[in-house]
Every structure is written in structure tokens, then in C-alpha cells.
Length: 403
Image (cartoon, rainbow, N blue to C red; front, top):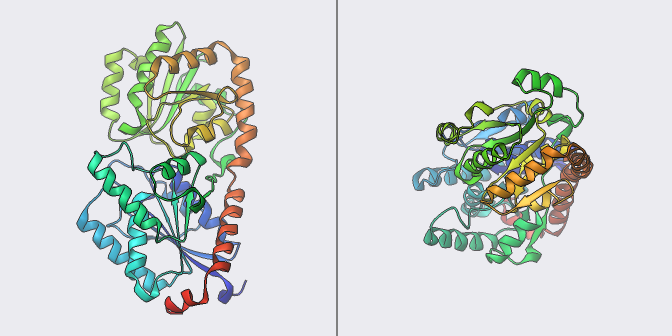
């Protein structure tokens, strides 16, 4: 495609940390390249103790423009500097579409677009990978953030939610009416990230010191309060107390790790718990697991649950956010209410005692998620949306943008 016909995208994410959004923007940026889009990916700095997933972008030759002031934490001065730097980049790059991902980037990016003045992008898109409008902050700050999101939504061409549940929650919070949202699920290179076959299971278990017949419960993620990792340990203790010969594999790191290891000592389960730290290659660990547990207080679209299902492993998770869109109750896993550790333990025990159930659920999950969360499907969906928006954009918008 001639350079004059290619579409220029400025994609902004707060940081390329461990999780679905970082994978999403890397895969999407690389996938759209062959569809006629030239993308500049902008990302901020990681918070202390966060693990980087920038290697996924590097592996796909996706160049990243760094704005160090952009990051997770709320800081008026740094946020202002990030907004001004991004506005300058918008004026220089003159993108056809500005597409922001995650809450902080959505605020900074859309305000920067307004500050770009006559060179404001004719199309502004924001993807909600979840939200922090309820349960993260006190009532006053939560109200202020909701008002800000409503104000920004009116100045955004298109809003995307990564699951129907995320969309419905945002509609309930009156961010925007339902018709303003498109639901476009994550896209992940699942065959690259995990291996659904049993290949590697014996080797992985030998490496981890897990006997072949021992029930292995896995957890993968960032050790923060919203993940309720303490519930993982409590449910695991209840599982052990119920007579199940099980071990627990905690894959990941984060600010709560030291406290969590201390808690494992207090509960008397530390000898049966492996704290494995952050791992770039996750396939061997899914191969070793018999089931994944995910007791989070909130989730947008949980990548670890998608990957576990793609690896043929059933998931026991809490019924929050976009989790019910990923895990189908009774088909490829079980859903319980947040904090229900006894129910988590009971569902895990059911899987431990029934290998045929594990196999059936694992097979059903893999069959469902491979196409549902395919990168090619994501690229198709976004390409279709972009083309519709570009077709609908008025010539006057391009004139105002300094074209």
C-alpha cells in the first residue's frame, strides 16, 4: 500500500507491565501493520516492583516511544508533564486516529488531544480494559473520576469495552449509554504463550519437584491487593485440611509478595507452596498445573484464565468484572463470589477427585477460547471499526486537524 494511503495511528498505554493490556497493544500494533496502518506506540514508565512485558513488543519489531512521566500512580505534576509531552507529539505526528488504552492513558491521551488544538486527531478511540471507578478509591475520589470519565466520553469518537460485563458496568456508572460502546475482546497469541497438549508436563513437574499424581493448583499474576492473593492461600489450606494431597504454585511478583510468603508460614502451608517469581515463559507452568485459581476482587479480562483454558486447564475464579465472559460455569470451570474461600476450596477438591471432569473441562475451555481470543479476530474487529470511523469522519475534521 502506498505511504499516502496508509493510516496513521497514535496508540497510548500507561505502561507495558505484566497483564492483558500490554499483550493486547503489542499484538494489535503488529497485526495492523499489514492492514495498512502505521502505528506509533506510546508507553510510560513502570511502577516500582512491576515486571515489564515490553519484550512482547520487541519480538514483533514494535517501536515504543517512551514518556517517562506517564505511569500508573496519580501525580499532578508528572501527569501534567505527560499530557503536555503527548500533546506535542500529537501535533508533530498528526495521527488520523488516537487510540488510548487503560484509565490513566485514557485521561492523559484524550486531554492531550484537546490541547493539540487545530491539530487534534479527527478520530479519538478509548478502550476500557476494566475500570477503577468503583472499589479502588474513596467515595469522593471515585465520584470525581466518574465525572471525569463522563466528560471525556462525550469527547471521544468511539468507546470500546473488552467484555459485555465491563460495558454494562460502565453503563450502570453512567459513563456513557450502551449504544456508544463496541465490545471487542482481547486477542492473544495463545499457541505461542501456552501449549494445550500434555507435552512438557512431565518435564515441568520434574523441574518443580511435583510428583506425577499430586494435584497442582496454579496462580499467575501480580501480587497486589485487588488480586486477593491471601484468599489463594486460605483456600489452599482448606483444600489441604480436607484431605487433598495438593501443592500450590504462585507464579508472579509484586508489592505483596513478602507479606504473602509470611502468611504462608502463618497458615502452615509454606512447605507445599512454591513462590516462583515473575516468569516470561509461562507455558511450562500451565503444563504442570491441574487447575488455575483466580480469587480477584476485580478483573477486566483475566489473561491468566484465558491462557489456562487454552492450555486445557479448568479455572476456579470469582464472579467479577469480565471473568464470567471468560469462564463458563460448569463447562470449563467454576465461579464463586469474592471472598468465598470455602467454595473455592470445595470446587478445587471436586476437580482434584475427578480427573475425567478436569479433562472434560480443559478440553471444552481450549476449544472455546482459541478462536474467541485469537489475535487475527482482534485485528479484524479493530480494522473494521477503524474503517467505519474513517468513512464517517467529515472532511471538515481533517481541515481542522491542520491537513
